[in-house]
Length: 381
Image 1 (cartoon, rainbow, N blue to C red):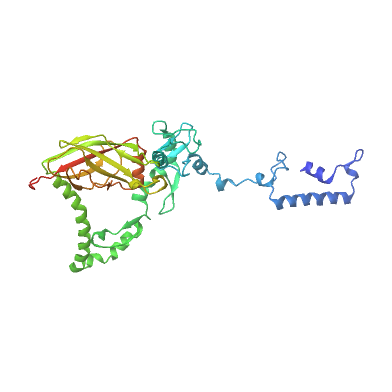
Image 2: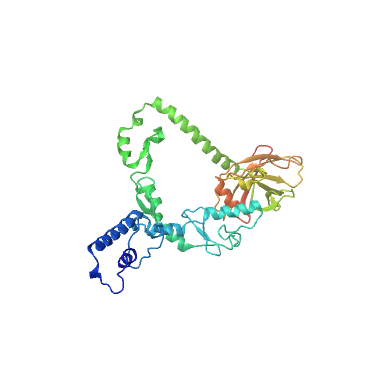
């Protein structure tokens, strides 16, 4: 502070001494120092000692208290987050050759977009300098383990837990997790926190309902169950057919010859039940710019390439391949193949959502398993 006082108050002239200062000069010096201190307090300058630079702008000199944003996990969040969605990865973490991190969802989405645009996928942080693909990018296991140990908040009790144990806590341990009454199977609609479940079940009125009241509730539940079981019964019935064939099919990407090319998939010819077949698939029913749509679907058709003497009644379905992790709900389709009607209509590939569709589009090829069941003319199976 002495340097500040000398600069604002002034030093004694050569040949004079500090003892020669009058009372008025001392009072003026005290007032000047007090005025400078008041100005410092007013603008929020913190005096850090003789090494601080008073000419530095006040905004740069104000330090944020350690308790507000100085936590290690908060600093790591910005370092380990996905550079595309800016969120912490929940599963696999990929990195480009320059080290930029991408969560699995964003990585697959970038590859799917590049397939739809017929462009080489690039890292969005490298600005078209670094190409990305499943062969060029690798997983960063160290980041995955580090992220799994970072604390996160339970959505029910709002307490902090490591990400690796959060799922188990929310499903099995949290006392505030949403649960259902054990009498749900006879129509109780109650939902609430787990710690209130014993009190509700002790007061639930459904166990005391009459048989007539329960019959109406059970009738609706039986209809839903019957629809679910119909598919499984149909599959078991098809397995009793005399002629059953299956094969692994590989959809390969191609482009149409239109001015604005469109992506489609086609398999090489394959033989099932002594007949030659081809499968074709398209994205979002061949809309012009599927890359601009958030919702993505695949549809396919089965084409008979062989010539037949009589109509060929067949049932068919597509399932995931033996080495893929895509989730496909089995749906059975029927068609009568002949020389005039050798192609089926395009039918949706029963994948669960757009995320699963992006997984297929991001792959070099789509590998699925096709089942064909030939229906006998006489109805005997």
